[in-house]
Structure formats: C-alpha cells, structure tokens
Length: 415
Ligand SMILES: Cc1cc2nc3c(=O)[nH]c(=O)nc-3n(C[C@H](O)[C@H](O)[C@H](O)COP(=O)(O)OP(=O)(O)OC[C@H]3O[C@@H](n4cnc5c(N)ncnc54)[C@H](O)[C@@H]3O)c2cc1C
Image 1 (cartoon, helix red, strand yellow):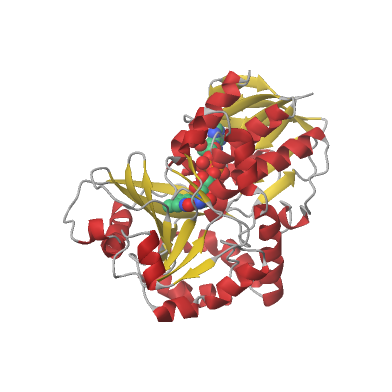
Image 2 (cartoon, protein in one colour):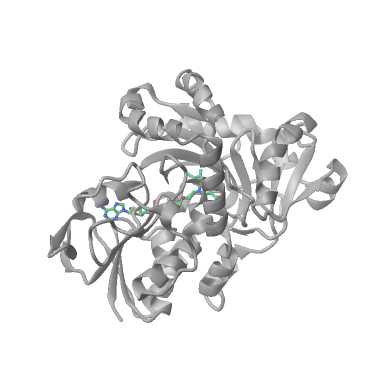
C-alpha cells in the first residue's frame, strides 16, 4: 500500500482521499485554503444521473461568442481583456464541435456518469456527510412550451445515453413542486438524481472523515513539485517541503499550473460561475430546479435559498464581479412564488471557478510521462456530480486495478 498526496481539497480531492483510503492507502490532502472553500463551496448542489446532464460543445456556442463580448449581464459572457489568452482554448473548442465529437463526448461522459450516485453512497453512508445528501431527484424547468420543444434534441440525446427522465405537464409540475410560479410551464424530472443541501459542508465532511480514518490534511500552498528519476519526490509549499510517494493533482481550475510544474501543458481554463443566497426566505421547494435558458440552478440549502449559475470567461485571477451574481436574482426571482414579490431581500454573493477543458470532458488518468502521478480535474459544470466516481477511478488506478471504463477520452494530452 502507498502513501498518496493529493493536491486540492475540493470535492474531487476529498472523494479521491476517501476512495484511496478504502483501498488501504494512506492519504495527505494539501490545500492552501480549508477543504471545500474553492469552487466546491458554492455550486448548485445537483448530483446528476447518467445522461441527464450531458451537453457537449456545440456550433451554436461559437455563433454566440461575439454577442457574449458585448453582453456583460448575459448568462454567458467573455471579458474583452481575457479574449487573447482564451483564444487557444476557444480554437480547440471550435475544432471539436463536429457531430462526431459531440457523440464521442456524450458517450464518454455518460460512461463516467454511470454509477456516480452509488459512488457517493459508498463514501457517505454511515458518516455525518450522509445527512447532507438528498435522494429525491431534480428538475429541469422551462418557461414556455416552445422552449421545452426546442430542447427536445438534448432530451433525446440524453435518453439515448441512458437518462431516466419524465416529462411533466404543468399540472404534474404544480403537484410536485407548488413553489414554482406560473413563470414555469414545463419540466423534466430526473427521479434518480441526488443533491446536497450544503456542498461546502459535504466536502469538509469527507475531508474530516479522511482525517478520522488516519489521513492528514495540511493547509499550505504548493509552490513547486520536485521530480527525480521521472517521478515526483516532494511538494514544496509555503509551509515547507513534504516528501511524496505517489501524487494526485485535483486542484480544480488551477490544475494546469500544477501540471506545468511537472513539465506538462494542459489546455485548462475556467468558466466562472456565481451564486446568490437568501438566508431569510422560506421556501417549500424540496429539490433543485435547473432553469436551462437562464443557466441557473435553484436549490434550498442549509444556509438559505441558493440561485447559482451563469458562465463568465475572465481567467482565474480576475476579481469577482458582484453585479453578475445580482443579475441572477434579477432574471430568476419570478421562478418561485416565494421570491417573485420579494424586493431587496438580504443576500450573499459568491463566485467560483469551474475547471473546464475545451471539449468539456475532465482529465482523469495517469500524468503523461511522469510515474506515480495521476490527474483528476476539469470537471466543469459536473464536478460535484462526478467527484465520487472520479475518486473511485483514481482509487482503482493507484491500486493497479482495472477501472472498467475507457479513460482514453479523458487523457491529459488529447489537445
Ligand atoms: C455557480 C456554479 C454552480 C455549479 N453547480 C454544480 C452542480 O449543481 N452540480 C455539479 O456537479 N457541479 C456544479 N458546479 C461545478 C462544481 O462546483 C465544480 O466542478 C467542482 O466544485 C470542482 O471541484 P474541484 O475539487 O475540482 O475544484 P475546487 O473545489 O476548486 O478545489 C480545488 C482546490 O485546489 C486548491 N488549490 C489550487 N491550487 C493549489 C495550490 N497551488 N496549492 C494548494 N492548493 C491549491 C484550491 O484552493 C481548491 O480548494 C457548479 C459550479 C459553479 C461555479
């Protein structure tokens, strides 16, 4: 059995630690902040099921890019200042928009999504974190019948990939979630989806559990990685040096910087997303509802009602634009009866960096050309969903077991 150091204590790193421990390995999680304070802090909390959430890059997205440059408030926006740096990523995305690429990505993602809720069950059952998991499905919602019909191709693709989904009429939707206002007319129900009522606490709970099981959690920033004889032997942090036996990089949107320390170029960028949270508004909503047109997920959480979403291309280092978070509120408040008439309620705002590759597939597998080192990052809009399954795969890889899944589509050197 090995000692595995994991850089990044977001949901992906924490799940890796738990699965590695289940395989008998010792673990050290290293993060510059407390576990769960990165992108895993403020997401919409949806743990999707196979096929319910696959959306490969499409030619439509490219067509929309000029508009994204001018619409600061749009659901997807590109900051002018970042355009030049984003260009190689955008070009790679553009090259991968063919129907064949979409099919390959769809199938690869469906294979990864398979077993993801079961993977969560494996690590949360019997722990305090289990209380943070809801097992009552999720909804995809539409304002109009026309939008519902326009989105049919996505549902057909997802059905072909194995999605369990029920189309709901307005009446069925009202019965299931009376909180949804008349601004919503149709929905798709994903009965097998899970969700969490607090993604930050879920991540912290898993990291704590790794500690209870004998693992170590260190708060330090990794500044460099020492390589000797083709394998990592130490991580150099702002708190000193830590020897390494085996290494997993799960540093979310910063993982390309860690990969660079190993001499590996990875075409990772970030789709920044925002949330607002309303601590004082009571809701009868019982499961997350994702509004596709607004790119927004609404989820009642332990600390308040959360509206999370939007995409902003501005790089990892740009400051947060608080007004983008508030624009989520302006666009989405009429979706729930409890918020439609609420004026200036108390709210907190947050920004997180989704780690995204140009083909929207994560990077999972051995670091190319470096022994005893694995990558687990780039999970874009599905990082919470895919974290447990990724942890399971990393546990298999480090232990030398067959993962039972084709990892070729997730290679780091595919671009
Ligand atoms: C608005 C929004 C809504 C979302 N909704 C959903 C959803 O409903 N369902 C879903 O599945 N996904 C969702 N996502 C995506 C999901 O949140 C991310 O994919 C996921 O959190 C990524 O997890 P991670 O562990 O890879 O990254 P992170 O949580 O960011 O963790 C990476 C960690 O690495 C650390 N790190 C980086 N560099 C270093 C270094 N040099 N030294 C030490 N530590 C370092 C960071 O501090 C960070 O804590 C959403 C995202 C956003 C922004």
